Length: 130
Image (cartoon, rainbow, N blue to C red; front, top):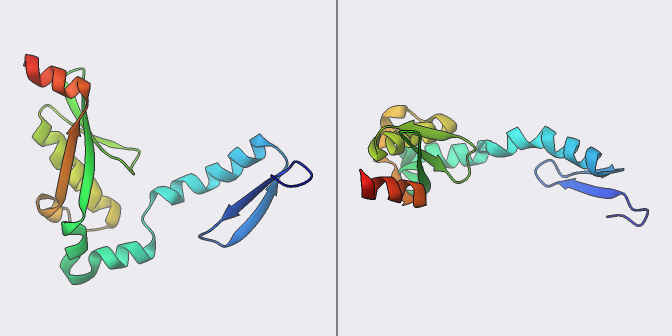
């Protein structure tokens, strides 16, 4: 917050400043950047694609798996989307494909990704009763 009670917003990636008069203006400023923030940067994509996508394959992506209405959902912590499947394997494999699509990698690499999965209480409860 500035001395005159306005909000100082700084975009590190663009190295730019904005002064917002109120929370509504801050929310608007953030909204403009949210979608771009969900996408990997060109530098990260270049690093991930080097050496036949080796970094993408060895990086341990964390998935969170839940269950509802007959489907498991596997979501990547940094992504706002989930992959759904009737089985954990279907949901997790779909999440691997989503990661490949996010980075522009061939989807055929999905089985080679290093994935870890944490089951939330809904997934565990369903597994124990199925």
